[in-house]
Amino acid sequence: MIFNRQRNNKKVGKKMLCVKFKKLSVMFFLVICIFADGAVLAGCHASKVQGRQSSQKAVAAGQKKESADEKPNAKKIVMDLGEMISLPLKEEEELLSVSSNRKKVVQATENGNLYAMKQGEAKVKAEIAVDDEVYKRIYHVKVKKYGMVYPAFQMMKGEHLDLQFNGDGIEAVWISKNPKVVQVSKNGRAVAKKKGTAVLMAETDDGKIYRCKLKISRKIKDIIYLTFDDGPNRYSTPKVLDILKKNGVKATFFELKPAKSDFDLTKRILDEGHALALHGYQHKYDIVYQSQKIYRENLDKLRALFFKKFGVWCTVSRFPGGSSNTKSRYNPGIMTKLTKKVHGWGYHYFDWNVDSGDAGGARTAKDTFANFKRGLQKGRGNVVLMHDFNGNDKTIDALNKMIQYGKKMGYHFLPITASTNEVHHGVNN
Ligand SMILES: [Zn+2]
Image 1 (cartoon, rainbow, N blue to C red):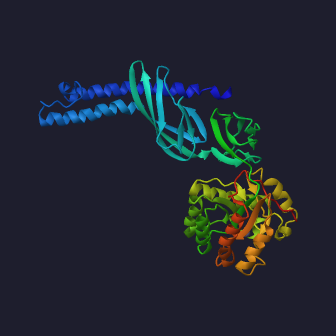
Image 2 (cartoon, rainbow, N blue to C red):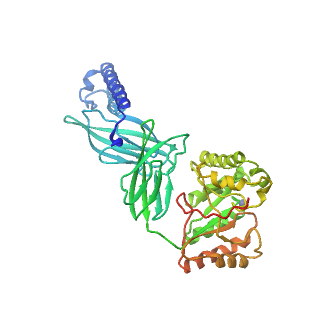
Image 3 (cartoon, protein in one colour):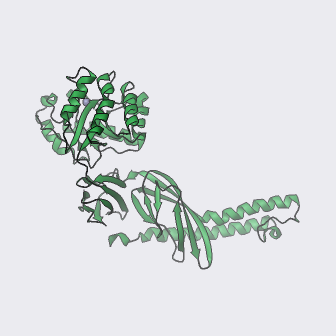
């Protein structure tokens, strides 16, 4: 199997380095022994019969010895998000046990594999036997925010997910270890076949191995995806979030570039488990639809900003005005082109099939609620269009009632993810 191949060159290199380091530290230790009075150092315990001065020396020497024991054994490892490596051990070393102090960041398996699950740092402790001696070794593992966009992902039976990397031009060949649960094409389209868990593995051109752990839930048919466009907004976003929180419901926010002072609002959206999605760096129709290049930049710039600020790589988007907009007609055919291109640029796009009317016809919260109720249909994903702008009480005052009603009618409220079946309008330009 391709995935059993180890990166020998690196391993050998590390091994040699390690040997050199060990020799050096042994020499270092010996030098300290000589300076700090050999008698005290015999067992590295401060002898009770020594005077104060020499016992201080002994303590110092004891610390040195400890660090001499541990330092060559502390290792640094840097991993890409989603990457899998095996612990770099020497031939003669036998792994007895291994554990990670932050399993959400790095998972360690009994046989010594490490999985980078989330950006951050973790300590991996290993117990290693060489002949009759047992050592403890600590690996300081740093997981970069670059790598796979979805090292772990949850989706429903019947959905599919296009596996992506957030770095430039990384190409990988994928296989599924549980094809009955999830099938995957070589280039990374994963299709959820049945409930369960599945592991997908990929090898890149430069020999790195990535892993995606997928959890497949049963198919849910009656869904409401609450979506809020044009935020974040100091007036409306906190109110919307409070209502969602009170009801234990997750939603999706199609944001514009936040004002500098409003980044905390976007952060709260993420912290509370909602989906952050892209509406665009800006919303002006006469600019964003001037060309394919300009539209693409309008998404890329916002995605890069969110990645930089929050480490989140957004792939879900919504066209300003929706894909059916006619505001772009000053550039004939642009929507026809864009709707065909965005997937190739790494984006999904969502229109809506329920319009609350809060940016148009609805004048009161009663109107918004009535539009919502009228638009819902059982047996599908209902994508509800709402807005996140100043003074939007029409939506804020109706939202609680909408959620209560949806729950009563047996709908599930979910955030939009990269595997959600896209809802598209007919294109009018
Ligand atoms: Zn908008």
